[in-house]
Image 1 (spheres, rainbow, N blue to C red):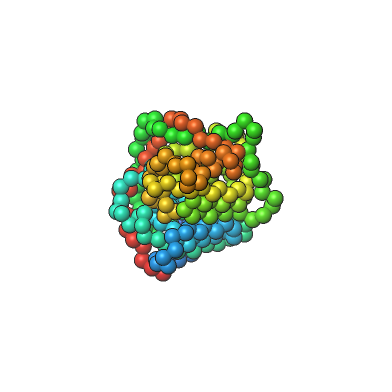
Image 2 (cartoon, rainbow, N blue to C red; image 1 turned 60 degrees about the vertical axis):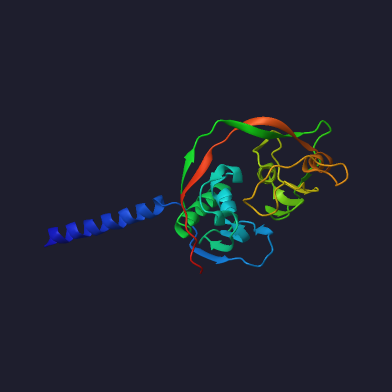
Length: 262
């Protein structure tokens, strides 16, 4: 009997240990996720700072959410139904036991888990060759950037013809420029700080709107309708875009579903 009890105790202990190891090996995930359709008619997108283990987004599309999760741009996402770039969602997600700001890599992995669980998203990556791109470079007179003075962030606000950034690295700017211009934008500034900046320009008819997931190449600017995004970058931020080449991997959507509301 004692031998049987010992074996049973060891079996239970082994099962508990195996379950604990399974939990620790799981991908980081949000413990609470609320997703609701957004139909307010305001196509602005707001993504809140990742503090307190939270991810908060208003008016976000699945395509834009994939950009956060997989660190890709619109032109790197192919396949899937049209609604991934048009239907908009309000998302509130919370990870338990995270008092401060979520590290960027951890947040990306948690968003990928959210996409797989709630949108049933399945993807694979395909390698591509060199494609036309832009290199973001500093003008000879230097950048016109303001180092963040300790204000909270990161925060990004985008409208048609307007971008504002608070406490962001230049990767956030290149991501938005890539979406606007329909080509990859590579950061070659060697600037590593966290900045506050505002960019205002007059969009061309073919240029992307503020709606994520609908990139379009800009047309030549006329002399009477204000600065193009290229001119605004030079005059307002002290940076320029130069033609370049870049390798581009593509994320292919194999399966996706609309989430149930909760």
